[in-house]
Amino acid sequence: MLHRTFVLEHRNASGEVDGLLPLALVQSLLFGRFLVSLPYVNTGGVWADNDDAARALIDEACDLADQHNVKYLELRHERPVDHAKLNFSRTDKKHMRLVLPESAEELDRSFKSKLRSQIKKSNEYGSSLQVGGAELLPEFYEIFSINMRDLGTPVFSQNLFLNILNSFAGDAEICLVRQKGRAVAAGLLVHTGGVTEVPSASSLREYNRTNANMWMYRNMLARAIERGSHTFDFGRSSEGAGTYKFKAQWGAKPETAHWQYYVRKGSPEAMRPDSDGKQRLVQIWQKLPVWLTRIIGPSIVRGIP
Image (cartoon, rainbow, N blue to C red):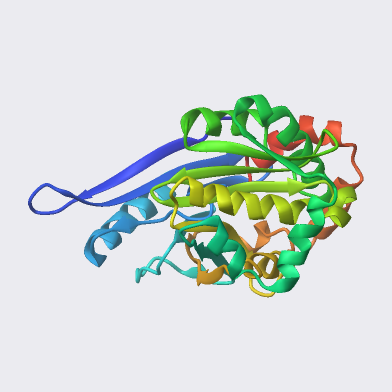
């Protein structure tokens, strides 16, 4: 089922656009309906020049939520907006972002000695990096789907990544790490507006001892500098979690993600993977064969905002 999308627009007295709010109606028989800005990505919500425009856009979004009888409206704001109908919020997630130096040499000098040693160790295993597009997608997806199964998370379809590569042609690319010819780690990079994001990155656990993942991240950061980016966005993490610490060791600084909700039914907490009952499902998923998760995973994850 395709998600219906909306882009709400606010104009000032002069007729100029001073606010936008992109939304997606996420719906499935399994989970119900949600109105989200934006699903599957780290940020979204209202982008407005002033609070009056922001509140007007949220008024309209709440009306849409009522019209479509969703469980809740979710706005993944960069900064909070004061609005009477927003009756729930989350601030537990942190955007982990690194201001990049002007050269890869400066980047290497910024690392602590332990991190430099970990990167250097991977060179002992003959790691090599290949950067490309759709031709690397099958190998990327092989690694990604194995990693998602191991985490107990339904996997996105391979076609989603193909669409990203095509839609951001020239600005989206895959970085693939090989050791002795085998693809062992891979990341998807998107370069836009001076910011490089890594929506997805994975490595095979059996190669953890080779620090292939560390070597990949160092080279993805260098690639971002090469592409002229001033910021590297590692994505969001819960403060203190393993992924938070991993990103912080590269020098990334936390910025609070302000997710605000207009809840109409139930609770947003019910959709969290660590909520009551979800851990059992995670454990079951981790025992499934990877080929099966690739078949049934996309139809499930499509309905999770």
